[in-house]
Image 1 (cartoon, rainbow, N blue to C red):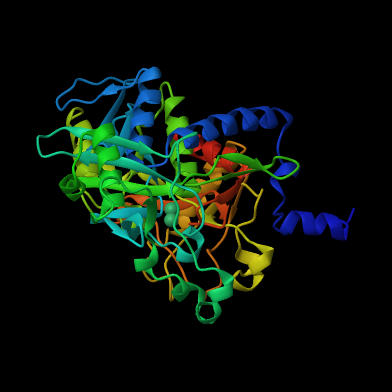
Image 2 (image 1 turned 45 degrees about the horizontal axis):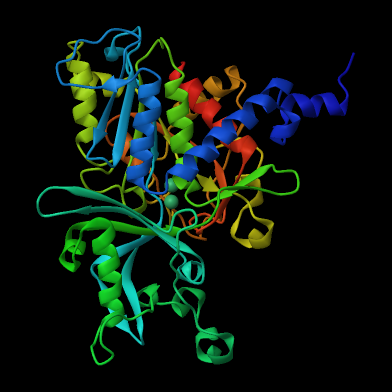
Length: 463
Ligand code: MN
Ligand code: MN
C-alpha cells in the first residue's frame, strides 16, 4: 500500500506546532500554578539583590543549607552559596561522581534599569533630582513619564548596610519627565535613540522647599532631611550606594484570555526562576545539578558577581574537591543550559525577523544554537552534538520547544552567559523564554513558554 501525500509529508516535514496543540490536559493545571509562583517571585524581586535574597529563602524552605568549604557531602545533599548578596549558586549532589560531569542551568538576575550616579542629588528650577546612569541596553525614550521606584543598598562608612525601598505599594513614586508635544518640534525630528539623551534621565524627587525663603537648595535639603529621617544617611553616603530606579509597574496577566504575563524584569528572571524552581524540586539526581543565578549579564558578565567571575569555578572546585575530583575533569563532562530569554516574533516589527527562524510566542522553550552579531561574532555557537543532546532530553521529557535566531542576520544581535560557560570547557547551549518588548520597562511573555522553560530546566537536571 503506497503512502498518501499527507503521510509522506508527516513523515518528513518538520511540524512546528503551537504549544497549545501539543500540551496535555494536566500541563494546563501545572502551568497556571507555576505562573502564579513566578508572578509572586517577580512582585518581590526587582533587583539582583532581592532575587538572591528570595532565592535563598525559597531554597532554605526546601532544605538547602549554606555551603562551607570542606563540608562532607552525600548524594541528595542540597547546598547553596551566595556571592556578595548579588548572585546565587545552588547544587544538589548527584548519585554519580562529579567526574562524570554536572548538569548546569545558568541564568542572570540583573535587569536593565537606571542606576544613580555617585553624586546624584541636585536642585534646579525649584525641583530636586537624582542623576542616573543607565545599566544595560535600554531604549531611553521608554523610561520617561512612567512611575519609578528606588531600590538597593547604601553601604555606610561604618560597615552597616542600609536597605532602601522607596516608592513601593502606596508610597509616592518617582518620574522622569519628557517634553510636551507643543514644544517638541525639534526633538521630534531626532532619531529615537537620540531624542532622550542619557543626561536627561534625571529622576524628579520633590518640589517642596524648607527653611527661609532667601536660602538656596531648600528642596534638596528637604529631600536629604527625609532620607536622613528614614535611613540615617547624609549626601556623602550616596558615594557608596547601589540605588536602582526600576519601573513601578504591577505584574499582571495580559490579554482577555490571560495567556501572557506583563512585568518588569522578565529578562532574565523568567529563566532564573525557572532554573531555581527546577532545582528546588530535585531530590536525588543522577548527576550533580547546579543552578547559577548570575549578576552583571546586562553589562557583559564582568565583575566579581558576573558569570566571568572565578566565584563559579571556586564553588565547583570546592564541590569537586570533596569527591577527590579534578575540576577540569568535571567541566569537560558537564552540560550547561544557558537559560536566557530570546526575542519573540512581533508582527508589528516583522521586518527585523526572519520568519522561518524566529522565536514564536506559545511555541515553548526557544533554543538558540548561537547568538552574537555580524556573522555570529561573540557567540559560543553550540556544536551539533550538543543541540542533539538537548533535543533528545527535551523530547523525552515532553517539553515543548523550538529553535530560532534572535532576528535577521544583519539586523543586530545580542549575547548571553553562554560563551563564558563554553570558555570553561563546558558544552553549552542557549535556551529560554521568547519575550516581547525585551528590555522595555514592561515586557511580555507567554505563560506556556514560561512553564515549558521550567520543564526544560528540570529535564536538564534530571538527565
Ligand atoms: Mn538576558
Ligand atoms: Mn538582556
